[in-house]
Image (cartoon, rainbow, N blue to C red; front, side, top):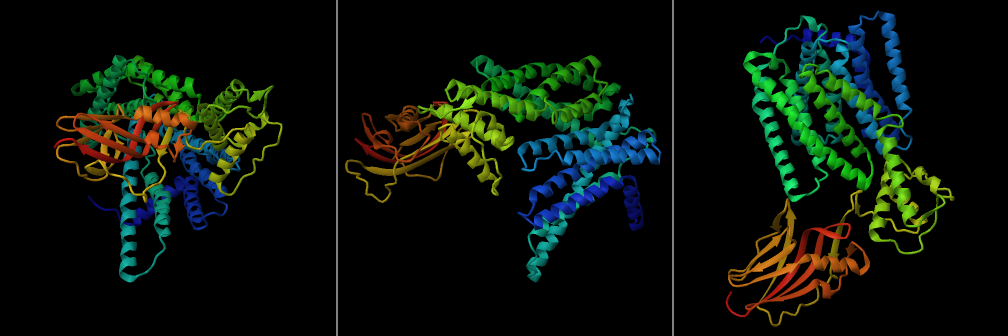
Length: 605
């Protein structure tokens, strides 16, 4: 293989710039904006981020515009007007970003970036039935993306090691920020330039070549993994059917990730399905899409369960529309016999774009849903009368308080405090505080206080899974009476992936062993002749009932000290800390506990 000369590399770089001038100018601008923001932290960061978002979107936008101009053979005048139109759309987007940067701006940027990348994948093939040409182009994009990423990582690693060597050998004391700045330059400028340099102009002259490494990777790595994942998900369906359980919330993302991975795998081997020696691919494709239907049903059950309990948020909105999209694509691909693969990026492009603006957008629908939940809760608890908030007269149930706190936090953090103004006669102070985290917390407390409620920042999202921590008063310096017992030892157990762990090896007399059952939430001390059990459920429920507080650090000894006895053993368990999770007021998990244990053996254990 002959390496290109320096002159050839420079000529290629020049030609690439002449073909994609505006896209590369945006890439260079975004890079230097990131470096400037890094070197001037705390100074106008939100304004700089707005420009970074705009310029990054400009890269993808003008790559697509270039492709469209080439496809329709625009003359210079039309190219100028197309570029002006693209610039105007970017300016319009720039002014839609909130002055007080919010999470919805991040969602909108991510969806627009995804949509514009999808546009690049099919811009050259709008109205074209050349499916193999479409596949060939995207194969080139994929390989170019992998190569540019690999080159970028290697170059960055080499330069970084060189800087470290200079620092160590010559005590140069080069600022650590240089590593981030080099990364910005490599990813923003080199990676983009190198990627675009490999974009073909005329695919009609390109022969359809299927790379052997890609074939091996897809057939012997991706497809077996997809099959394994499918079997696991089907086993889960059987499990919850037998146990008559509702699916866990995380199953939605698992099924979506599996489905997307499976579809991506089938797209990679698309040209092979019509070859006689690869008939199994056609069979696998049809079986795969038919096999998706039970998983799609599971998806709908899982997402509607969450929507009914907690309303719509941006995450649930996207899970719902992706589930509907997956059902539509599955039906289409079965009917179409997997021929028109362009429908996948085109449909995702329109979903991404439509989901960020308008009354049907993720943000409008989510805000409306959570405001409706907020209003319903206030009416039910007599806090909202004639459309206006009045201070609660009685102590509200801790679960309701946490649920209201969760909604208040969500709306303040994602959409802004001004959305509560309609419920109050008093003018809310929505001024931005310098510390954004402090601003959100203070706004949450302000809204809750006006309702006569205390804001609880410890609630776990909007799913009513509430973490707790119960402890005794700190008495470590007070001597412990051990009279009447043979042994004193400490126990610390924490659970991870349902497996109990201890912080270190401990001394246990003779054959005495301890066990903690994650599912039963019971601690067991077992000898050759006796078994003693401490059940955490009644303990935690009694502690919670004292004052409905999930964080109690002075629990009474009557609830934290427990004596157990059997024919041969007397044991006192002094619990010093218990941590876990309640679902509403039902104990869900005990994640960890610490205890001092006194043991008396009536005979040798």
